[in-house]
Length: 124
Image (cartoon, rainbow, N blue to C red; front, side):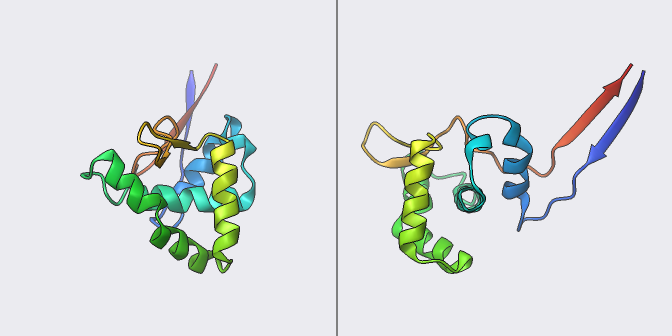
């Protein structure tokens, strides 16, 4: 049996987008359009900057007005475009409503701050 090991180079700038693309064979990631992937990747980047905060505060910082504005500026689109994309992410269950009626990143799809992903292809 032989192994083919592939390491994928990632940077802090592109890692969440790469992870989303790699997971793109699975729903709901497979349902995302390009801009939705970009916005969700940026949300994950913000989300993972605050690992020591409780879930409510962490999500307030991630999904709050300032973060939406920063995403809008970085993508060069209006904040209304970002709001529409956030609505699409809610429809795809990547953002959900918590028990306290606040929007949160769905913990089921929150990609943690990883340094790398390695795929091992094992042949017969």
